[in-house]
Image (tube, rainbow, N blue to C red; front, side, top):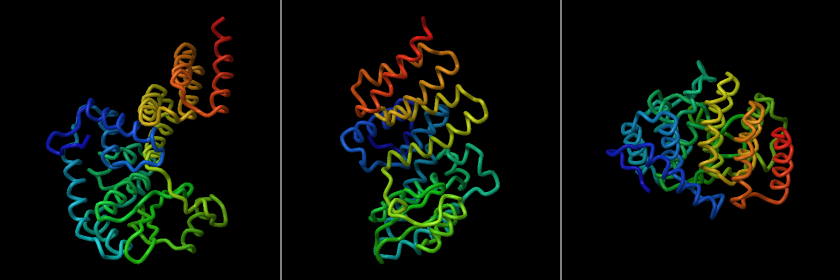
Length: 282
């Protein structure tokens, strides 16, 4: 399903986009997704009122501008487009605000978290015909773009600056995430995991503010996108059980097991958890 900017996105069409992405990832966990439109779908499901027509049109604008960049150095032209021309930058003033992980708001404000900005940079890079993905770099989201000139690693939060081994090592140390670069820090992250990381920022902030209902709502959207991810089910069930909703916790685990998801070790852990919480019903 493609999102028509003129039609916007409703709760129904946004949900359908998530369901299609979940089906694609069931066939291939590393499937390439339209992360930017899915990010807007997640925004619509969180705030059903807007239909995000302006934001969808802006994605078309980004893609149209980026299409003319093919054949040029991504490390030069992507920052020029995204940061200089369109005004995207990291929000250093209110970094912890949940709005920085809501893609519709990020587009409106041109400010956001590294992962939100990274999704938009990838959108532009792919529209230019380059291969782009998020990287498994801890604590601060980076992207890599393969295009003219080879492989480029960019930091969307800081104006799309180009990163080399030295600057990546310095960032790693600054974030308190280690001393030395490893092959893992250069590994691609699947698109679905990037979107889950985006949502995880909202979920954590809601739970930290004791908004349990809001946190569970985010988890529900994450589970819709990734119904096979055991950790999401376990987190939801644990939150429900801690709040005394034992039946709800048991239902979440049972539905996962009944669907046949999960490796043996994940299913064994869930069965143990289920047995432990069901004793509280007796």
